[in-house]
Length: 381
Image (cartoon, rainbow, N blue to C red; front, side, top):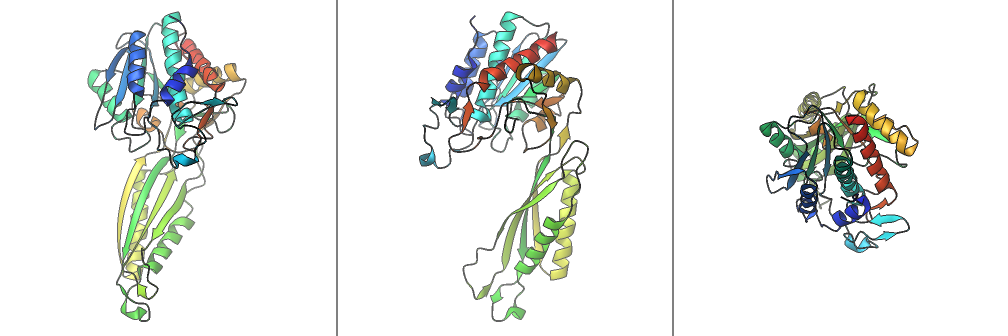
């Protein structure tokens, strides 16, 4: 069997219009390729989301290495602003363009190509599992979680897992993710009494209460950072009244905040703090405050050790750069995998992910495949 070209595979995947929740043909393509290469493939579809589980080697092998990734992509945005076809995989000036070029069809192509070539050139004493989802960019309710639920039901187990998300800010090889901050969104609704702006004493304006609450939250020092994490942050992302009139005090005002938090906190502790602050302001201003909270994920870390050392050595061998161990950035599906086994993330430069004219430097794709191939070689050695 000839070696799999990860550049061509990246292009083939980009040409699949797999905007969440559409499968777009991407998982069909990968299932066919992996099945032909001897992997046992199972579609694990749930809630209208398509997912793929693939294993090479015996179930319950002495050692099993896992890769995780996604083929779904974010919407195009203003399609007229693109200078190329968003699903054309056009190459110009050393870059391949297209939605998902960076996040993360090139990463999936690299680890699929590395896994197929590895099991054919040097079959390992163990197993390789690939979990590929079509629901990472949206709510992630029926993606990697569905795959992990399936694995639990079937007695499938990864000993370690590498998520192929783009992790490098500017230069290939510079950053390896060993954890992620948690993420929490909170929606506040302050309700007062509507009235005439000329007679404010006959109304109860919700805006001063909301402004004081948002100021208290935004000016609070959550922490100064921990051993492996930067300081937690809280951002007020919107405040709205929907009031077009200048002579009316509105009845209601809404606001939303986003918190990215480290391991000094939990979603539960932050929720309790937000509710206490809201209750205090509600009492001080005699208004009603409703609060809805959604915790997208808790902070987590895979402490530096054998897995991060394995990946870092391979990155340095292929790029000449020893990667920084980081917990920066947003959330990823590693937040689900960490309940199953130790997990780290490494991928290529992600500067243009989610942007118009998203693109990947073509030379980085085979380089990433080489890194993943070395990781597999060293792990099973």
